[in-house]
Image (tube, rainbow, N blue to C red; front, side):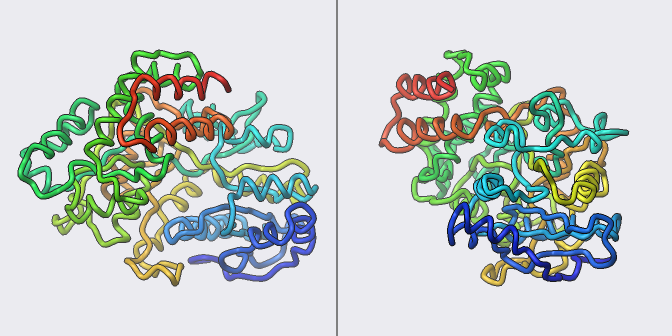
Length: 452
């Protein structure tokens, strides 16, 4: 089988009735795929297709899912699958409704770790996917993120680096700034303030100020880069006030220098790509948006790319995405095969470096920009050679593989309710005002995690 498997409609009357019973028409709409369900052909070992739900609906995300499904079909041609993209609401919300209605999918794709807290008691174990070389090939952080209640409940399929900084090559050159200096908090602050003092016609810093999650990400990236131990203590609710206050102060300085008109992180990235801004802090996923918008990386073969990327600090902050099995599966053997494949080199390479990404059109007809490209994630396994990826993902993969320490993204540690409390504190004390009260913001952030 080459390319995505041919879509074959399958009867899903039972899930649709459950969706209506638990969430009304809106739940039914959310369960609808943004395309036809993807099903493998041929005889089935399990009798019931493995239903997989996920939110990977954009061009690169959907190509990754289709690539993984096709590779799984090659490896397990007798296991039927029904892979559906949830387009209108969070996959976690829909799966929660389906569990309440007594009709969960076999597997869903989401962030593991603390994000799975609402599903405690409703997930299956997945120990068989972690046998052989799988455990040794995944670093401790990946293994920790996939365990709850003393057992494995998830298998990671993708890893993003959260604490990355993107810069415009020409703007930094005109201001006389070495891009390598952006790899520390002091260096980033110094570079942004140097651009502000220069005659370069560009904003020093781009930021999606109206989106609190971008500002929470900026704050945590600065804290983790400056003091990894304090970052871990902050997430555990155990203070380290001095370091937290320093990170809040650094965040405020960058926000003051920032472009307050950027509505999304993609828009902020575009401003860096086209030279309207010097730098932006965003996760490795932004590389995909920049390429789709037609901005090349500086190390691409043509050598005329407009942007580059550096990591903040020596301990990458990592956000995993994983496949998670629910309890009482209607197709336990098929689900086990899907999850075991996700733990392999072949599965993770298919998802993060789909061979079709550079060749096929973006499957979203409403997106008229450049063809789909890799989504900005790398395999969670550390035995996949970084050289298999083009810049800048080769550098992201290398830093991930060689790091002495990897730090968890907020969602990997904290339950969704605590993340929402943090986002509220960020919105109230870092985003909404014209200036930042550093002490009050520090108190609010510490209270949000301390009260969890």
